[in-house]
Length: 269
Image (cartoon, rainbow, N blue to C red):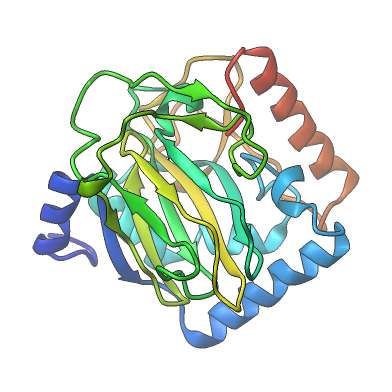
């Protein structure tokens, strides 16, 4: 029996490689988490998104609360089974009238997770619409067992670190995944996805949380760590919980991870 996802949603997941929208946060929770993100942005002079790549939760206690919400774990369990780890998280925010965009890409090419079946929950803390540059996908692009070649364009307004881009995507097949604040989408990390600039009068703020069934492995470096979310974490080592926001120990843990990740030769997302 499913925890919270319907059979229709599971069918959407199987065919499209993504599902949306899924109600997650109450209005009160949404406002509280959004305010905490904005406070973090202020404390880092707008640098939270760039500084805390891939493991944004390590120096941020409220991210641990969000990651371990039972409702979120219920949805992830419906997709990957009872043994779940969170191995990463990222912020994705576009200011009002922000020209930045995210090009067509596959997460799995860069993450080093084997088999490449990690998934991402993208949680909207403000409305993500056509106008504000919501995520788009190519349904069914997760089904192929082969990765697609990416060109590293380093385009100045591309929010991906190297502007990694899949060329010649048939955009007539693209489907938007709009979300109301407090809802989430979930996508397979082989699914082609992208987003346009924000043309709205409000910021588009989202949190991406990367989950995996715990039998999956990080194969690009040793000693991979994760938050045990549910069940048996198996070979994933535990992550250090931050005593306070941006504590020296938590920032060092983040830097240690980024050093291992960069030395593995993989491109930073």
